[in-house]
Amino acid sequence: MQSVLTDFDTRVEEVNKYFHFLEQLSTGKTKLAVLEDSGEHRIKPIDAELERTLKANGYLLLYNLVESTMRNAILAIFDELKSREISFNSVRIEIKNIVLDNLKKHLTNDFHSQITDISIDIIKAEFNRIKLFSGNVNRDQITTIARKYGFSPSTDYTRTKHGKNLDTVLKNRNYLAHGNESFANVGRDVTIGDIVQIKNEVVEYLRQILINIENYLDNQEYLHSDNRST
Image 1: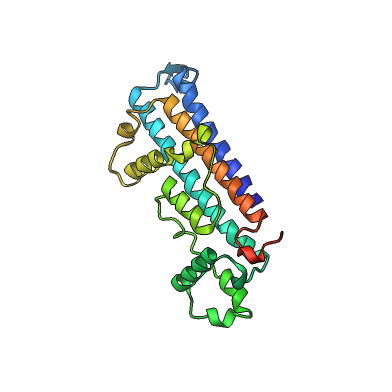
Image 2: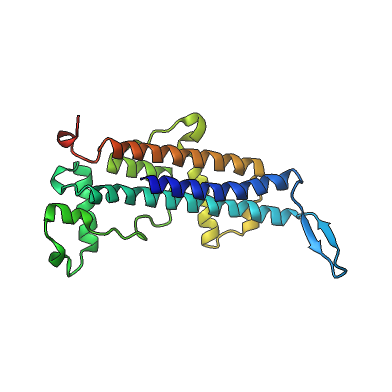
């Protein structure tokens, strides 16, 4: 799980740099310097349409952070089960259902030849990283996943709005990814201050969800209650 948290911090730093650039734009501290044929630099203001495009691009960066974070977190749960060689018989019923569903979808012809202890080996069956999420991660899906695996979806509403802004991020990401709206149109009705606030709440929401998953792993809540250490 530590590698997931480290990767998250790295990606957040990348996102923060971009949004800091947007904030600098809004205060006029960042300008374009155009190199003229004469060799001199001319300061050129960033026009409104380019600013809208840059704001809209922020939604793509945020969605990339959301999906990569959740994918890595779910894989970390199964990495924990594999590294500890947790038996299928000892996990909670929700995890059993997930494992069986994964096995059914991704069973290969040579799987039987790899089995030495079926109760452990079926948990080690690889998940398809691409299909863990299908480009539609929002608050409702994260809440559903939390209940499905058994970790807490609760966060501090005053700092996260319980992930409400993930719906805005997903909606605008889909508009852009599928070409339904131009970047300029998506960025038209949001101020730089607004999108920075969205970023702050999304990042904090994801951070608190990761902490919940870390606690879930530390407390071995993936196990059936009868098999947990007291």
